[in-house]
Length: 74
Image (cartoon, rainbow, N blue to C red; front, top):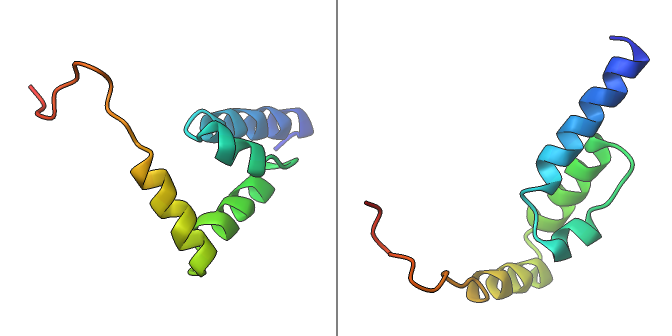
């Protein structure tokens, strides 16, 4: 793979990952390459530490539905 192709692929992968992250997680996971971002996300969410569990619980409890949205899919 050419260097230019690699850089384009890396940028596309980075954008794809970043659009699915919350602002807080995105700020904490900013790295140079997709591999580094993926490893950082692994450290943040794959860890079984107490602080990670508390962080995930806080994220879960802060989820909110949009006003007027239905709980049932139609």
